[in-house]
Length: 227
Length: 94
Figure 1: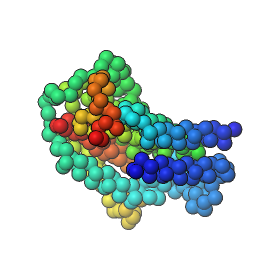
Figure 2: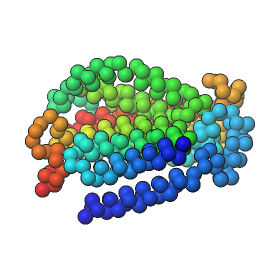
Figure 3: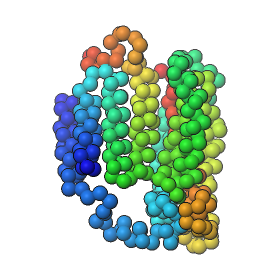
Figure 4: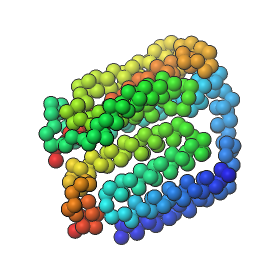
């Protein structure tokens, strides 16, 4: 019965998907808000990536709300699964040769990629959420390869707390300076250079570290939970 | 040309989604549901949303698969090497 309901839903979804793609004109948006943002975002924020301008400058408060949601979810999972630091896990088997070797090769590359996505969030596609998820995946890959190599919950919790505080403090400083919470501040700099767009890269750095620490925490407590 | 690629991508996505419902072992279900995410990533790239594509690639393909696999392993439904019938959906439902 459940299978048939799912199939019915999937059929409807595929009809909708095909209906969407047939009359599609790529790259031309009928939305008025998009045109307004396209025209004014670079002057307002100094970010070359307009998605970042929307996420952190125009809709900074929504991003804070998303952080709160993620924090609530991670806390709930921590309460249910427990976050005890185990010195060694005897139950989980060691990974095979391919995973163990690939983890050693991929870990530095993933780390560099994650930091690149986070720090260039205001220039190229990407940003705190994506970079943080890659960061968590990189550290969890090490745990997956060698089960003794656990993520330290104490360390990730401290990083998570500091990053979350930093995000709010950056917003409060803008409140003190300009009277608006989470308004971009600092010098906008030259468009397209690494040190540009004012406080947006700092916000994304805090966001990336928080998301990364939270997801790494979540994954490692899921891996260490007892049957 | 773009429309042809789009139709192929969406067809792949839909076929993978149907296979998730029909497949009878958890391993293939997980692989197929990751395939749905790969299709979505291609779709987002073609629709010029690289930010969303990046998120979908990391969360949909990598993290979701890992979380499902870990959960199935914890409730003893994830066995690849053993030849017992534990990874058969139809039998484990009984």
